[in-house]
Image 1 (spheres, rainbow, N blue to C red):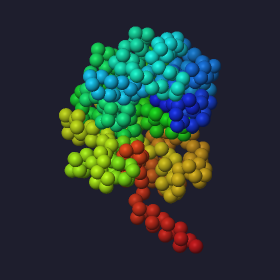
Image 2 (cartoon, one colour):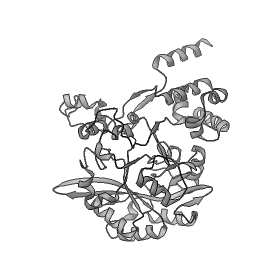
Image 3 (spheres, rainbow, N blue to C red):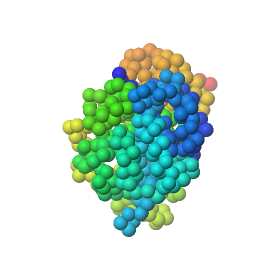
Image 4 (spheres, rainbow, N blue to C red):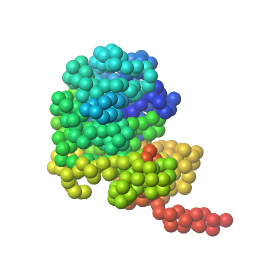
Amino acid sequence: MEFIADFHIHSKFSRATSKDMDIRHLSEWAKIKGIKLMGTGDFTHHLWLEELKNNLEDCGNGLYQFNGVNFILTTEISSIYSKNGRGYRIHNIIVAPSFKSVDAINDTLSRVGNLASDGRPILGLDAAELARIVFDIDENCMVIPGHIWTPWFSLFGSMSGFDRIADCFEDQTEKIFALETGLSSDPAMNWRLSALDKFTLISNSDSHSPQKIGREANVFDCELDYMTIRDVLKTKDKKRFLYTIEFFPEEGKYHYDGHRLCQTRMSPQETKQNNGRCPKCNKPVTVGVMNRVEKLADRPIGFVPQNSIPYKNLIPLDEIIADVKGVGKASQAVEREYRACLSKFGTEFEILLKADKNTLIKNLPAKICEGIIRMREGRVNIKAGYDGEYGIIDIFSDKEKEEKSEKQLNLF
């Protein structure tokens, strides 16, 4: 069966997350979006784990269920440690097939650091040792490096990471078979590194609020079963892993280099010209994902490996509606239109991914329909994100928006 999965989210017990990041709201929004399988996030937190155990029904296949939505047991660990004379900060996603395995993992990690401090705990634990602990407890667990290019907390991060996966995971490297690309990179950027060819690239929302689940996700055509999904990821099976759903990577918070305090956005070429410093204050800029990819790449832009999993760049429906209306996506006008669109199609992904052009034209306002078609064709305008600031994405040009405003004024 074909289904959409979002493995990486956070609960209400993580810092800077919505109080609505609970099982009930997650299942409600999964149905709104059209997501069949959700990661639980944060299984290391004792209060969240208690909620999971009290609310989820065991499906008997490594997955769990609440109100018709499937869940897979996941968490994220922040490892901050020193190795060979320098500091590293790495985020890893752990996926487990049972509460028994989760309990054993939590018991061991609780001796390393305080798991109750945050839904995503910070541990002074080498990433290789974390992987060793997890695999020793249950070889069917998965350890997936998270958002691997993010500057401050990731495997390849410019400020905190490694140049090679083997340097990070040492003798555990062979047990790592999937990598999360993160919001600021897409598969095409990762394809430029031949060292990543053997890994399966996945994408997840890393959501801190229910409305943002599925902003990146994975589309499978296989049994809803833990071991089957693990096998699909391990073997990089293109027949069963159909494609990933991606941000336009420029919209991610760390795509370009820059200095947020000075509102300075810089391409890798501009950073090189300025010797890595902000032209306004002369302080070092935060080196983003695009620059880091350029540094490590051994292939040209546009290279596509033979065994690559396809992907589709999407813009969330509320952002499209907000762009059409010229208002913020949190406005009531956007909410009303969003719900009206859903009433015609059932789920957001049905609108963004599946409905054909003629069906869209028959059922949606013309401008929203035009926005969806442009998104599918990649005809968008983006000011790239940098140094923690999301990129600004526009489907309609400033000229088109001015013409719309003039038409509205003429009505009066």
